[in-house]
Length: 230
Image 1 (cartoon, rainbow, N blue to C red):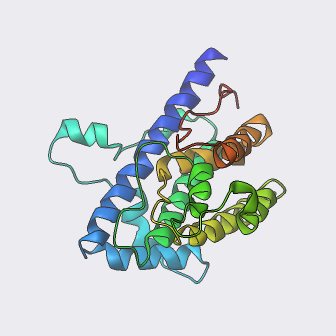
Image 2 (image 1 turned 90 degrees about the vertical axis):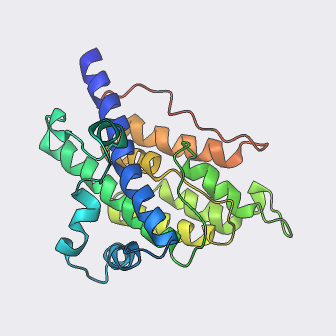
Image 3 (image 1 turned 90 degrees about the horizontal axis):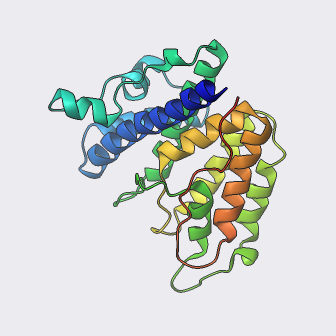
């Protein structure tokens, strides 16, 4: 049991690094008007269900991230030995979560001129809270009805497609405020946990609610309290 827990915890950390390595590369290229402009357009089409060719986005989702040396290659998270997940269904869920997070990043950064992705473990719940931190018209959490309604609906959906649809709607709302930055690697881990169901899914929704309503300017960045057992 302890061994299984350690494997899943290590895989969650590897998944976060894997996604963040790709997201940060795409963000850097996009903000400097690099080749990522076209790549992100293909990823948005894929996320919106409007069709895209997997071979056009395959390198961004599954390819290696270029680094200058072997040491940085290892630390970048560009490679990920998902074979440690012995169950094929868990490998598929983990990669589905990675793809979903990168697609959501592509939607979030569209038309932006500054970074929206960070690697400081800022949670999705905290990013949703920041939607209301408008300098001219600040809102208390309880007054953010549109955001709350979508977060509430996340608790009742049963499939990944419906779950990510609501995430997309909230990410569009984040465009109102530059303070809405997000760690997409952590989001990928949360999506993977949600897919695994049970107390892990509840951990994710609990943490998002906590981070949304938590008062003050402190970002709650600690992972869920439960150890991974599934």
